[in-house]
Every structure is written in structure tokens, then in C-alpha cells.
Amino acid sequence: MITVYDSYHKLYKFRKACDREKRFITEKLFPMFSEYVKQTMNEMREDITAKKWLPEKNYCKPCRKSHKAEEFFSSLLDIATAEFMSSKEYLKLLKEFGLAEEHKVE
Image: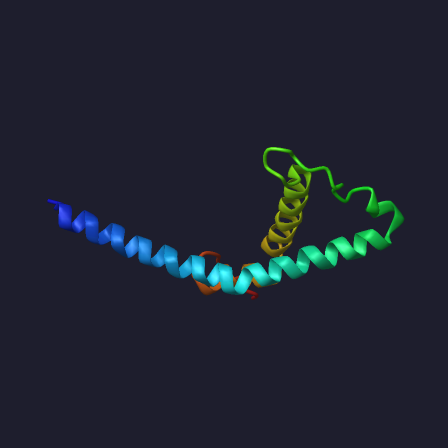
């Protein structure tokens, strides 16, 4: 039988784990994401063809920010995620955790 204490204890442990992950993401990944987005935008500004894909400075009045920019940044991060998931590093990570089989050469 699961007690209220057990449920609370599991929830507490889950929240602690989430806090650790959030801290790691904030401290480690956010700076890399920012650098990636800045570098990509700067490179695209210099390319006449790519420049047309950059978000314009049209702000949403209520939000006071560009929703097109949000979509653009999200797309860049989606591309980075897709590239990672098709990489050798990703396959190595899966194998490290036993989530993919090793290829046996005979």
C-alpha cells in the first residue's frame, strides 16, 4: 500500500531531480544555445540568399516580442537536435546506456 508519505517522498525526489536538470540546462546548455543562435544569425546576415529567412523586427504589441523570432530560434534548436540524433555521438550515448545494440563484426 502506498502511503501519503511515500507519494510525497517520490514527488520531492522528482522535484529535486528536475531542479538539478534545470540548473544544468541553465548553466551549461543556455550559453551554448545562445552562441549557436548568434553565430547562425550573423552568418545568415552575411549571405544574401539566407538573409531573407531571418526574422524581421515586427513585434507583437501585447507580448512586446517577435513571435517569428521565437519560431526561428526554435527551428534552429530543432535542427541542432536532429543533427545530434543522427550523429555517431548520439549512437555512442545510446550504446553507453544499453539503449542500442553493439554491431558485431565477424
